[in-house]
Amino acid sequence: MPRPLAWTATLAVVLLLGIPHGALDGEVARPLLRPRFGRAWFLAFAVPYLSLSAAVLLAWRAAPEAVLAGFLAASVLHFGEEDAGPGRPLELLVRGGLSIALPVLLHPAATARVFEAAMLAPMPAIPPWLQAAALAWAVLAPFAVARMIAAGRWPVAVEGLLLGLAFAALPPLAGFALYFVGLHAPRHTASLAADPRRAPRVRSTGEALWRSLPVTALTLLIGAALWPFFPGAPPERLLALTLQGLAALTLPHLLLDGIAARVAPPVGGASRHRPPR
Ligand SMILES: CC1=C(/C=C/C(C)=C/C=C/C(C)=C/C=C/C=C(C)/C=C/C=C(C)/C=C/C2=C(C)CCCC2(C)C)C(C)(C)CCC1
Ligand SMILES: [Fe+2]
Image 1 (cartoon, rainbow, N blue to C red):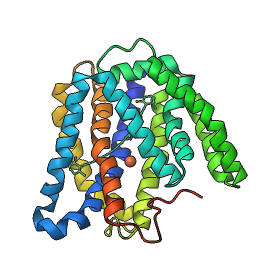
Image 2 (image 1 turned 90 degrees about the vertical axis):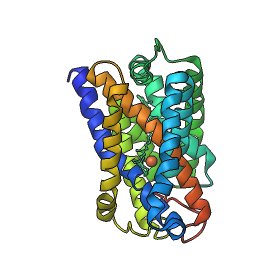
Image 3 (image 1 turned 180 degrees about the horizontal axis):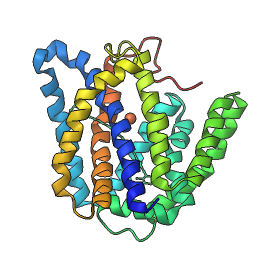
């Protein structure tokens, strides 16, 4: 497939199937804010959420490489928390970092091209700080895998191996889409459905999908309104808008996870996520 078409198709999948899991943030905030703000709860939630996101979008223009670094660090934390659960810091780093470190190590030129288009700033090669972080990941990964195997957690080790093969075989953006839409979003949704205290109205995947629709539509509308502010040909423009937009949503999405866990500790102990095993 020619690159512009491949980028557009991959980004469409990320937007249509990835956004809904974040749109469920509204369902997490609802029980926390509705008792206090009544019918105005959504406004009380959306205004700070959107303000944080807007601040990140503006920061992309002012300091693209610093924001990229922050976004990647936040992603490791966010993906790792969902995959490893609490109390496993090494596993959090290794599982959360896999989807970034592998493309950087295995497809450096293609990954730098994607970052360049996303940042709207030149990146002729992977910068040294990112190369160093990816190498540190490669040093830590075998220790995490050895621990999983020693604990008899074979499914987790096999999942890592299969993901590694996928990231080796696929172009960087497609590898990310596979992980984000195929693992992260369903896992996040399943953990919400399994925890009646975090999002009481989300009791099944079907309900999650249904409940996520209005905020997903609102997010896509806001994204469409931002289109004129991004330069370039449509595929590059969509890439910059999608990745900068995801980074902007990641900050409140990550903060809300932490706040909700503190305010309403989940049923059955400290664990807020259910790792696969
Ligand atoms: C609720 C609400 C809302 C909504 C929200 C949402 C919808 C959210 C979402 C969220 C989300 C949805 C999130 C996401 C996240 C994501 C992430 C975190 C990602 C990451 C990524 C990465 C890190 C990548 C990387 C790369 C590239 C880029 C290329 C190649 C290679 C690699 C793979 C390295 C609104 C605003 C409307 C309003 C208010 C309320
Ligand atoms: Fe997420």
